Image 1: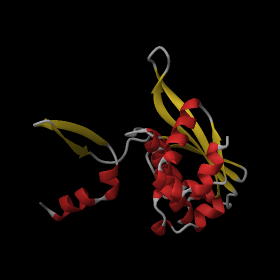
Image 2: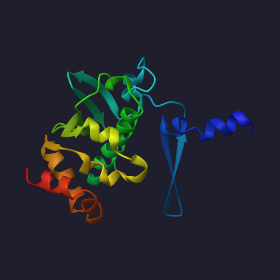
Image 3: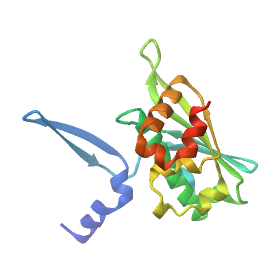
Length: 198
């Protein structure tokens, strides 16, 4: 293996993006292998400036500046269970926060708030593919910039939010399942109180 090959296989951008999954069944035990190929296929990232929140995570579908607010559309591609949808959103929000902290172009002049609209794939009553909006999470841009992400696990990211707005029945189910988990709710107690009284 050449030095260039070694660097290519350890580059986090190459590992994180464009993964396909192959599952082999051996003696009743499932073995999953991820085959990663290049950059993530996120149309929103094409043409975005370096350091832009549009490049931060492949879940970021759009980022629109509206005065002092940045509206970010997140589409979480997959999850093992209902709790995982919020876990995926928290990881994407953390990456956007890291980008704002590093001086993302969307933060000039400085933002007041960042509002994340979280959607997931689903099907309608006829079995057609649709996008389901789960909820909106609003954050103070100052808090996202100030957070020490190296000392925060993703279960604490929801607790940084200043508001949560549920958009669908599925959104309520996700938040209920997430907050019913003792570990997650202990990490984000004020978020769960706000989410469950709605």
